[in-house]
Amino acid sequence: MNKCEKRKRLLVDEKKRDQGKKTDNGGMRQCKGWSVVLLVLLGLGALAQKLPTRDEGLFQMQIRDKSMFHDSSVVPDGAEISGYLFRDTPKRYYFVVEEDNTPLSVTVTPCDAPLEWKLTLQELPEEASGEGSGEPEPLDQQKQQVTVDEGTELFTYKGNDVESYVATSTPSGLYQLELLSTEKDSNFKVYATTTPESDQPYPELPYDPRVDVTALGRTTVTLAWKPTPTGSLMGQPVQYCVVINKEHNFKSMCAAEAKISTDDAFMLAPKPGRDFSPFDFAHFGFVPSDSGFGKDRGLTSNKISRAYAAKPKTSDIQKVCIGNKNIFTVSDLKPDTQYYFDVFAVNSATNTSTAYVGTFARTKEEARQKTVELKDGKVSDVFIKRKGSKFLRFAPVSSHQRVTLFVHTCLDAVQVQVRRDGKLLLSQNVEGVRQFQLRGKPKAKYLIRLRGSRKGASTLKMLATTRPSSKQPFPSLPEDTRIKAFDKLRTCSSATVAWLGTQDRNKYCIYRKEVADNYGEEQRRREQNQCAGPETRRKSEKVLCKYFHSPNLQKAVTTETITGLEPGKTYLLDVYVVGHSGHSVKYQSKLVKTRKYC
Image 1 (spheres, helix red, strand yellow):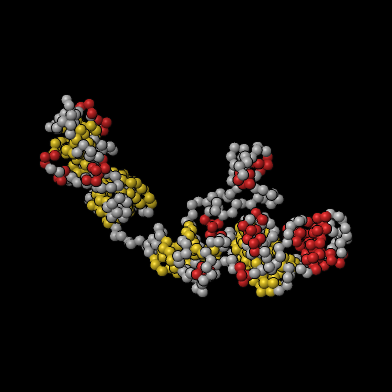
Image 2 (cartoon, rainbow, N blue to C red):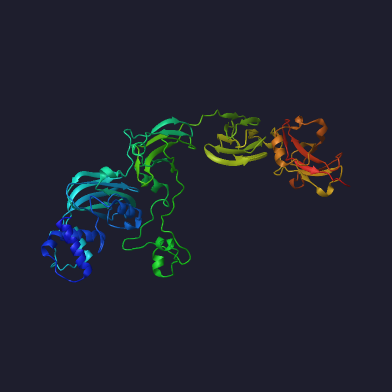
């Protein structure tokens, strides 16, 4: 222990005894500078850090207690701290190097925005300003003494890169780190150490730190990178995290996390001059009162407001941590889209990270499909693979006021999108039979996109025409194509049903089929092709065919009694409406059961 340290200890002992004795003025002149520095950093009664060596057990205990350094101006030796900057409001951090020829490393990591920061060596006062009474001066006066002189500037930087100041030998003294954000309020991280050779807090990058794209598809990209020596050679716990987004590469993990979500980033700090934020009250369960100070801090009497920035819209950025693998395939991407990929090596024990050199790639385009040309008034059969899509084009040769689009799905539902000269006119899921009336436009062209079901392949019939309904190959249909059965008219051998018609005279054919009692709607949909016409039915299943229409749509309804049924049996009834050109459409099937006892 040198003379200076012995005299500092004597000074502390004399302060505790509070005897008011005079101390050695010569010793005060030599040690007053260090006393001022330590009081500035730690406050009255705090213990100074001994640099460059340290009590490792005490250090580990301190860095686990994050509250020791929360909102403090002290930079601990060998631990990464997080901070917050208000725009255009500088913030200063201090630490002491007690011995000459000490190595020093300071690393600053910007998160949300570029930072300006500088490192200076402050001049220490050589003499005490008091009479050596042993009583320390007020803390504000001591800070003013230290910070009056701007000191010697050692290093400056401006930007959003992770930047470090490294020196193998530095003089003893008080070091000041000043940070400034001129763009917006921002988060940052700071790490300082006097033992850089042994600490190695950040995972080391390999000799080739680039991320390579090894495979590229329409919805997938495979990435590969060389492992960090920190995990393989030094045995430290390291995992890799991959960040994917559409905007740009990130230079640090905290920059990516700040972009992902404001909830995952830091809490907004209170306004300058306040020593608390609204979150402090909500976090501990205190409900604010109706007083003015509660409202001023963003709290209401009925609801606690969280002191977070408004959550942005759903972002396309995502982070995936994959353990110690150095090959990863990103899936569920969009075709023909550019993505940016970043890989970070993360020390699992300290949560510090190092960024690889990111990359970017554009996924492959979707295979261009042949567009099917629809002819006016002609029925087209369309087949769509499971989860696939088809494009159809309709270009009327003459002027037209409207276009009638007829869609008849045979199996599962199909999504239909129609655009006229690029403008979206229609987007609906269609199951069964649907007819759409679209407003026409001279020389307009229509692009129809059909998207298949996730369950299986889809087949359908498609008709587009500008002709009047009387000349269409498909029969006209009512809006409701259900068959109604009258329960009170059921007998042991008959069933009475009704269905709606239209103003056009059409032919209707009724068919029956006996099915099992447990025959359900799902089974019916699986077994039957809705586009199959009456020509596919057995002759024994036919009940009758008849023509029907009504000038008054309110009265366009017809009934039929089906006879010759057996008691207690279940039957599947179908009604087909047949158009002038022979194309038919089946109404929704109906299950009926005859009475068992009459």
